[in-house]
Image: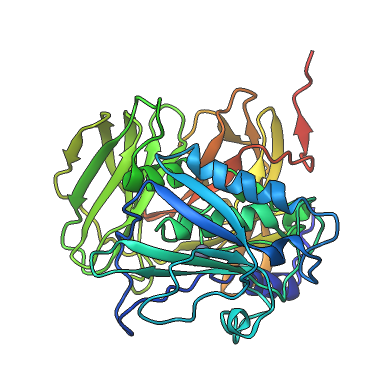
Length: 435
Ligand SMILES: [Zn+2]
């Protein structure tokens, strides 16, 4: 099998996946605090009438009302938060500054102020959210602008952004959430257009475990959810750089939640469902690359906080995974896969010299088909491999990581890169017959 991977595909992939959010705050130059929240459990939103009028950016026939309603409900179902949604003829967001007009607006109108949101990168960014907050880190207003230069749809039309996925991501910001490094999370930084991997890019419509833990950490669980919320915290030994820290469910390998340690190497993950989890960390931006550290198992209990003894870290590595892919395209977007099927998956990384690299999963539901690993010629600084994975028909929905172990023992991962969810991926190589 030959992989056709023109440089153009990679370039397009790079260009597609830019950050979708800016944060405005009262004091210029200061970093956004990481614990912004609404003080009230009821958040009032005003929908601009521009959303319901014909717009160049809205594909005719799109179910705008349905997409809006579902994207708010998705977050309401995850945490103790309620939206009160009204409409307004106002179509322009509050300009950046100390405070706005107090109205949290969702708009798509191509007004001068709205277009300023996208100055410089209007071609790639689907939407942005501007959050205003006071000196006590309480959010006072959050405005969402759908990029009027982009095209949105609700039917998976190739080349457009999925309206509901975009809104769900931006509402996460409106609630105070930041980007996640978990590749399958709705709050991950990269937003793909429909058609990447030959599939609709609608996975962001539903929240991953990481998104759910993130919003519950701020607002608590919705009524009726008993098994919540535990938390873990700790410190990464002698780490001079920040680290990604994440948890995977011991029995299934599903990614549960992730966070980044702060500048003093401390981390905490809250909003967790009780369970037995494996704890991983990996220094980021360590010169030359770094290894994933396996810090063993933690037992999280609802309502309890656990302090982890300081975990070791800082192991440099010359090999790094950078991309994953499907259908001849490499990116940093999750690949949707389904139980009871097999798929040809690609990974790309640097410094991998072996012809048969040691690729593995933490999940008993995923396996690599023997003899399926192929090394592809790509470029001198990027090694690309493909392999076939098989998923048991009873694999639980969630995000699963791909791991690679270098000959020297260092390990790298693409956390949550494979997403088992609602998206049906019919480009499978094999399907277990159903009787
Ligand atoms: Zn974003």
